[in-house]
Image 1 (tube, rainbow, N blue to C red):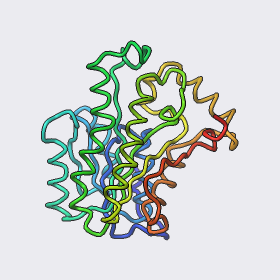
Image 2 (tube, rainbow, N blue to C red):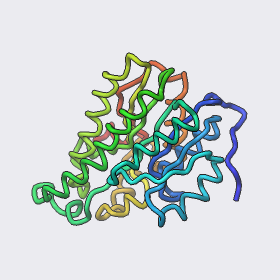
Image 3 (cartoon, helix red, strand yellow):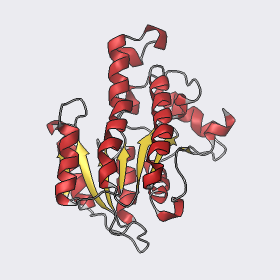
Image 4 (cartoon, rainbow, N blue to C red):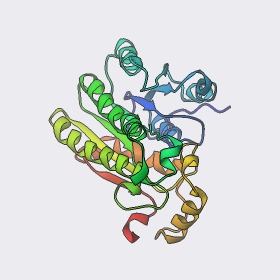
Length: 262
């Protein structure tokens, strides 16, 4: 298995980042992690539980990660333990990628109107509030500024059939990004929502009729092809460099222009 090493262009050399949300080598978070690494960054990686560790650990080894840490944001103290480990090992942090989302299947597959209170709150806590908690813990470690990235989707802005409950949850995520960009900007901390086009990931498999969504997106996008995790990774890594140091609070679409055609 090939180890991922920095390339000739290393605009993130000596930078340290946290990657949250790799499930396997089809994950958007994996595409981003590879790009960050090729740009020269050192990475800490989290995994959800012992079962997922079997998939994530070999990928962390390919990245040369110094830290591989459990993190289920529903479990008390696990997120805090991640940041404690980073503080003890590095003492600082330059960027965080938050690629975590969840909604109970029965709520995701039904109408928003029919969603349960418990399901809505769980989706909001895991998919949105965990970002807020992550930013709060990252803030004191970003001593020289930094970047925080969260994964969103166009269904936050417009109604996307079958996206259902996750639409308002992602809308809340994007609003949180804007508010935190305002609050943290004085410390040089930039916050962005990344909105890729449809990509076949394990998380996306829970969305009803997702294959249709992908085919429709590729045919309607001005750049008529499907988006890859590599596309998302390269664009996100660029935003972590000084080339984007005056950009913050945005929702950045990496979707071949699909969002401009509605």
